Structure formats: C-alpha cells, structure tokens
Image (cartoon, helix red, strand yellow):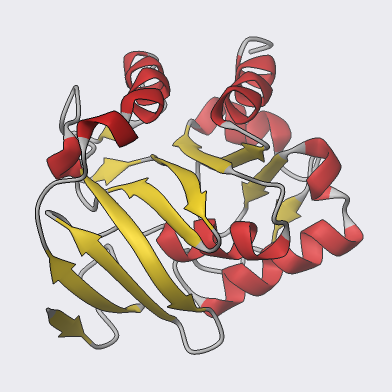
Length: 204
C-alpha cells in the first residue's frame, strides 16, 4: 500500500491510500464500459492534445464502496479491469480516500464520493468535459461555485449545498464553474445518469 499525502501532481488533490492488487473483475465493469465507450466516442471522455485525460464514470457497489475509472485513463479508447479502481473508504472532511485495484482512483473520486454520501439512492455518477455544453448550462442548472476546486473538501461541500438549495437531486445534473468544461450527471443507475446527460447534449 502506498500513502500519498496531499498529492498535488496536477491530477489528485486529496490524500490517497492506494492498495495495488489485481485488476477489477471484468464482470463488474460490463455496464460501466458500455457507457464509457459511448462517452469516449462522443469525446465527452478522453484526453487533450497535451495528454491530460478528462472525464470519468462510476457506480456504487454497496454502501459507500464504488467503482470508478482510474487516474489518467482518458488516453485509452477502451478499458479493462486494469483501468478501474474500487474506492473502499473516504473521509470528505479530512480530504482522505482509500482505494484498491491495479490503478489509483480518478482525481475526481472525492466529488463522486460526495454525491454518493448525500443520497443513498444515487448509484451512478458521470463526469464529462465539453465547453459548449458547459457554457450553455452554466448557472442555468445547479452550478458549483467557481471557488470550489475539484478533488477538494470545498467542492464536496458545494455538492451538499446544491442538493439542499438548488434541488440538484431532482435535476440530476451539476455544472462546476471552478472546473471549466466540467459537467456531472447522476441517478439511480447508469442508464438514468447517461440519459440525463444525453438529453442536454443532444440539444446542442
């Protein structure tokens, strides 16, 4: 196990305990890959020209445990169990997360964790990047403060505020003003989260 305190490499901003083990079983990622492949084909998940990846997708496994695409996997057109990580514990207030797999969990894992912690009926979260979509929805749907950076306790607190004050739960979508291009959708399952995203994306 490795313990990276306050990782600040341009990707992960939280303290992460990583237990490197075998790849996630392929049977556990079938549905994840269906949607991940679709989002990759639409360039809603992928990598910029400088090689930095963007976008991620997760599903709740049980309790607060969830599976999520791994850090820096945006360059891969298709994923295997080696590209996913299982988040097995987290503490939002302490900005701490523990995961296991063949790769570390995505840099956006803390934001996914915050959404799961707010509502036990949410079982899937999708995070994509698209500047045109982001601009069209900014402050028109629940929008996180520009002062809340991804992967920090501040963005987690913003998620809680949006669920309480802006009815994000009912709308199933959040825009992150402090994380340009960032769009989150979520729901009872991946199909629900994906259809919410497609509803807005297809209007562009």
